[in-house]
Image 1 (cartoon, rainbow, N blue to C red):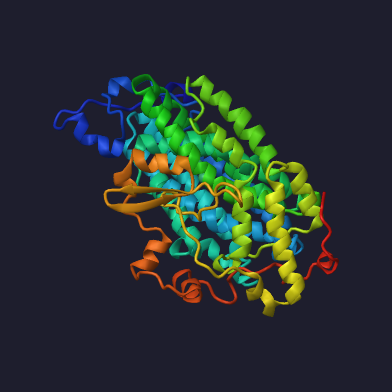
Image 2: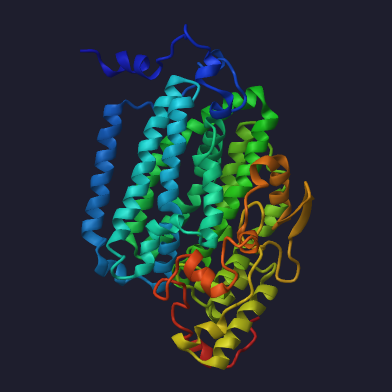
Length: 497
Ligand code: MN
Ligand code: MN
């Protein structure tokens, strides 16, 4: 029998010449991606981790068994019930936002497995598709038992099947990133930007918070998933090397576009979980500190290795680090009944910590929290007073990222308008406007929530919107996790300096 070294190179590089059809017909540019190059330009495509299918299956089996062992030991319902309520609500954001998004990663990888331009790339993408199935199945399996305890966990599966405003934004992102994407853009945007640039926030940062929060099963899940991501993320690096050689301007565009789009997603999902939905004593660092370490330090080194520049809007991004996810969390709290998880009102100790970590704009942000605290003081605690401490006006949404216009600061919103082909568009930020103008045909026809209301597709009343269009019920819509019962609220407000 042949030894592994004798046959693996034959199995992973299995390309041939076509006699009945043109290469361009088998790998059309519209689905294989730009730049279109003959196979000769891709034949040196190489991956760092060389795997056979047999090895792949054996490894994955071991990893699954070790996740199940942790689940059996510390992942039962009674273990989850002991977790801090704020943290449990962070889990609901992750379960809903990421489980089915991982499934879309399978579709993107399958596109690479068919339309990737070299056989080794296609084989690796096949493994990547199997990885992403696993990343869908593990959270759905682990969180399913929690549905009977807390129906908001049903949103792990339901979320992407609703027209909830955040689901519209998340679908807009993942439809473009994975489901409807050509192989080259998919692998650069997903492997290189999302998996190399951003997921360390989850896999290292959030895993360490999970450890502190005593959530061993979440920690185990994300670290197990990370071992797959580290392997298949390598596909993107090899694809980017060839694109850089033939069209560096396009490579830079993809980096600039996808860095911004990922920043929006991760600042919301990870930023709010780290800085608001983790117990104060369990936070080793702030979201900003994690971002500085894992994105600003690590990712910039990677960009330099490829000869890429940092995105043109870097100063805007750095400025947003101090404020964007705070604006988003304040909006989420104020509109919590439009979401599927509960929010926590930050108290004096949290606000003191946030002021230390985010001095730049905290004065303005703190005033928002003081106003909300004062509203609870006036009406008193209790579920029946939820509506009295809640916004009622319809927010406006960005025509690119589909998120509320929450960029800038409370006193200086960064929203800007555009007249394009006789229609009006509004953007939360300059980078969102810039992405729209680079590919208007791709984005101009998508309707954000307010346009859906105006066209009659979505109901105009806030309560009907929440129940009929967002699919929320009194059981599942978001509330204050403590219904305003905070011991510190009884004290008269004292300015925190
Ligand atoms: Mn994944
Ligand atoms: Mn992945």
